Length: 117
Length: 106
Image 1 (cartoon, rainbow over the protein chains, first blue to last red):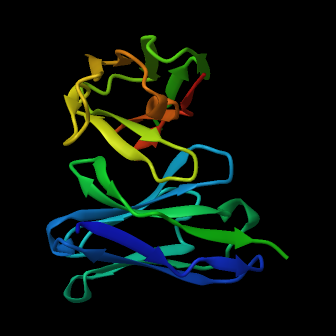
Image 2 (tube, each protein chain N blue to C red; image 1 turned 180 degrees about the vertical axis):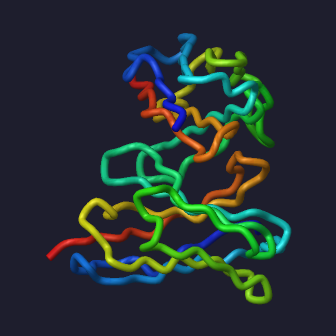
């Protein structure tokens, strides 16, 4: 079955760090740009970052640039998001998404990140 | 950043009704527009890409049109499972941006 499965979310204090993972199954991650999209509680969708198939290009939304790092391990069919200097406004459900020319045809179920003291 | 504005925020309809959802872009995004459905507690699901192309497995009850700055998603006859949140997203310009959503409710 083609699917994405996120993990690594949790409760963290402001200023702390978390590393999210996304395991792909049923397809080769190496064939796709991959993206992280987040959704704050009760809010809409926000694009966070994406990464090219071979990892040679990475892009971030302004609010996370310099604090978050997207990476991938194609051999392990996995995508990652290292999140540092976390803020309350980073609290959200983080989705791993398969990117096809800019639209998102496959979503994981999400992993919840809560930043609170 | 391109601002996507959806209207109405909430659409109150009955099963069997037709629903028409609108999405407006602050700049011309050509046909680089997608629509997603999100049910409570679930991840979004792609309905439409390239402004009017239904995704695999999406019933013909869903149709979409538009280009440039004005887009429409039409649900021909609402089924119980269609009551959900709907988002549009442009992917013409970086960063990709989503509308704030339209809730289709009974």
